[in-house]
Image 1: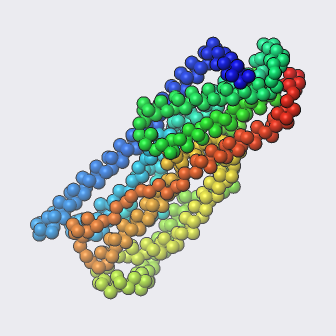
Image 2: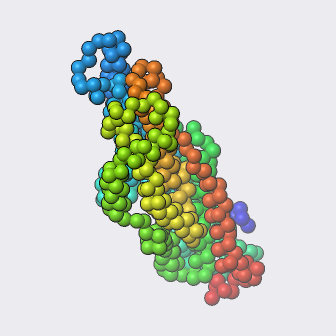
Length: 476
């Protein structure tokens, strides 16, 4: 019976031009989304390349000047701006911290349109005050980016609804349902077979057009086969969820108009209303502290430190006896006082930053709890993690920059207190930043969750009808 259903269904879809429409529409959507995603990645790489070129240019000039100084040649300019001074290197020639895109970054824009991908931390300025956000077009932020994640999460469910909303009701409205009931198969089993056939056809077309778009516009994607396979599986699971929902609506309502309205309502609830509500709920329950208030408190702390500068310096030298032994206190200037008060500054501002991070963490935890209510949230989180554009990735990048900034300062500050000059040898030994993707990719967990959610909804909703094997409820 399944073979007959398969043969009949394929003929029906071919004659109604549904396969052609579906193939053409998904091909165009995935092609444009992949192209657009690759353009975003190319712009990101272009911006990084410009910064690297600028750094190389500045380094070349610095190395040339250092060479002249070591040869004893005369160099123009004030001594405090010469690269032989450690603080000149730390302030005017900072290293570049870069967050390069992953192989699948084109899949989801995520937070990449909000945060910068490179930073040049200097010895002057507090780590906590570094700004990692970029100036972006607010209209683009409002509507988002047309990427593959957008096509999968928002558009594919609409295509599924159009593809399946009248699978059963159409037979009833045409008067052929009673004839089908006379066949040696329960009507509900016939509906499930029909849905399974359409699911396989729909998923096959989606995977085919998706991989074809990658082959044309993003060959590098096939360099990460494991993640690519996981993406195909999680998308297949997301499609299955919407087919299960459509199947339930078909059986329970069995009216084309009501089916369409109900499925569109579920789409609005799952894809738009729930994510927006959960996001607003997180901001309301766990509001982040006012940034303006934090800046004012930091200014008050700085003012207080300036008034206690001598006491802070003595305390700093007591905690760092290796610097005190080789330092001439009479030659202490701005930089010495600055680094002495920097540690005090960080200790006093730590509670402010901890509160800010605590609230953000609670908001993320709330989203993680409620993501099981909306597969759209789960899909967005999963694709962002695979693409390396999630908020967790950018927060970890910020953390790595903080760590590098401490390493950078720890290399130069002792030279300041020991009154050492910066040389070509020191330039070769300077710390270099290397970004590491330390965020665990739990997309396989997402696949299991979507399958469990789909199965639970299916058996809770129509499990009794499956056991009954009767068509009377459907025909009524």
